[in-house]
Image 1 (cartoon, rainbow, N blue to C red):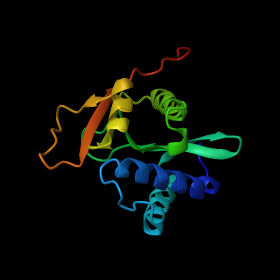
Image 2: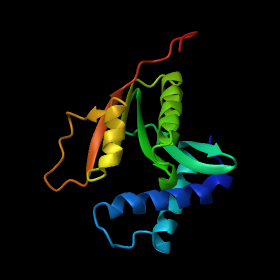
Image 3: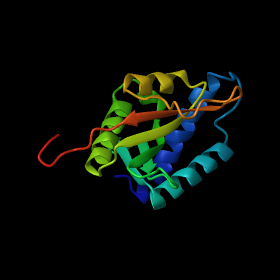
Image 4: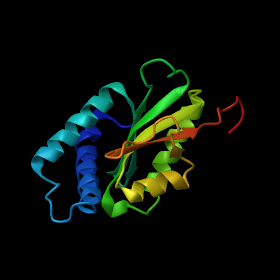
Length: 165
């Protein structure tokens, strides 16, 4: 689990990750401005207060973080939403994202969730490939608009059984 003491490190890695994938869409635009860090910090401050939040720490350094929670509204029973899964760009491809994803799946299954959903930035091909490789599929009930900025993905979860894995 992530803690309030991890907030600054998580906000920093999120700011760096967002700047890295946004540069793929708009090279030369300064996405790593102080205002962006403040925005990311506010996102994670709220997540640490209301969501379940996990992080990967190696040698005392936070390398990745994920937050998730129950959706609100009709039809939300048994569902979980992955709000964020962020990995420091210096550690992309090192297994940090996979470790976070695995930890989320374990927590969700143990909590009895049967369905997970997330929104991924449309142009973030790296993230979309990651989720596709982990079994996530476009939500057939939510077709993206022609000017969509995000794509909704879903994942069916096998619920953990007592004594099972």
